[in-house]
Length: 569
Image (cartoon, rainbow, N blue to C red; front, side, top):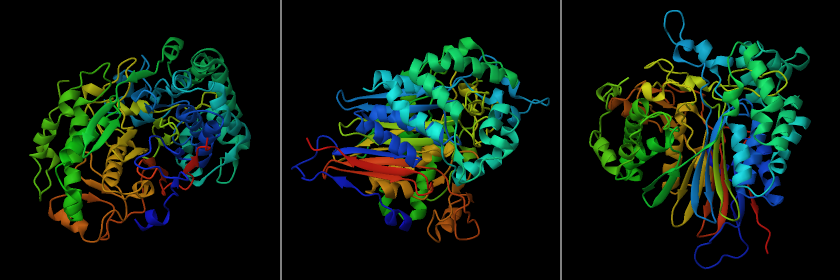
């Protein structure tokens, strides 16, 4: 918290404060995982674009400068608010399973899940959705041509940018896999030398792919030159994508989940994200408790118990709504939350084994998020990913496009945990054209006095980080304080609380253990760890003072939040 208080982003206000509450923000605010992406968004706003045009610029630039986290070879979710109509829209650009990706393809000779197959190379990759989302954002929501909003990303891909520590370190972790593929070696080991911190990283092939997207829109990626290179690279590496399933990709517009929490209107991600339903469960379980009056141990205990119950439901009920009958009305109902709350003992942990583990009949820090509010009051929460570090590791030769490894987010073998330790059953089993369950949770919060946009990467921990951020806003914290909050997590199984180092005050860990909780990491009594997680990016508009502020996670030194005032008419 000391870090949060020392690194507060400046809040900017209009020169004169009108009586009452402002009807629109005094300018624009953008927070993203890289300063170049934030600057790209403002470049487009200064050129006359709105928040949706800026989202194209930020998203595409992150695809260039954060290949460790996201890119054109991945997918994402975009939560939009149109200030003119008051309408909220959710764009689902999640990857989907190719027809060849049947569950048996991911098992070894002993019938066990084969991580090599599900996390590396062509079989781990779903059909990408992010390029289609950029086209959709520009054509249906922005006011500038797609080419204009893609221009900053194209320029940076051509000119290059300095390699940062996380990017270089991630490549060393994944080098054994990535250097298998000629297209990847050409990008990350030019001249036979792997990228290193401080190098200028140029991506001319990716720039060309972006130029084709800018010129031809959807067909510039999913058909024609780029598509042929993608298909050739996948097939050369042993995969079986087809031209028809690549060209058949479509962004889906879905209805966001919306509910009230202590005077806030919460708008968040629907399936195939698991985040919105889980947030509705957790927050409605917690709503009657006055958490601020509790000691830290009991506060954490109640929050953890809400997490435990929501993640249990995630395991069995959630998946792609086009393939799975999800009991969404039940899971987001206040009466259902009240029933779950009644099973919580105020002083004792509920062993996960005592919650029903009977199935219905038979995402680490890789991922990135940005938040935007513009001077008209439009807003965007965008979370995008290639799944694990550098996705599949495969770049089809000549494209610069690093493919995702999102197939690992399916329940490839029922009841077997994936790379994030979460598991699933039939609701999230792979089928041709089906979208894998996600934890990405872009979220809006709006009260009578404030508007906030927030989200984060972090695999299965995304939802609980967003939850803690929302509880922070509800407790009166500012945007940068929210971004810096300590983090802890419980996901039903394994039955333990995971925590960052320094997450709990002295004595809290012992008190939680006395309640029956098992802990991993994060205390002063032998569990300390230097590991930190997440990269929360948030923006806030205070309507009472007509000020904008940003919160960019201090765990990420290249992230940036920035505010620019609108010109005075």
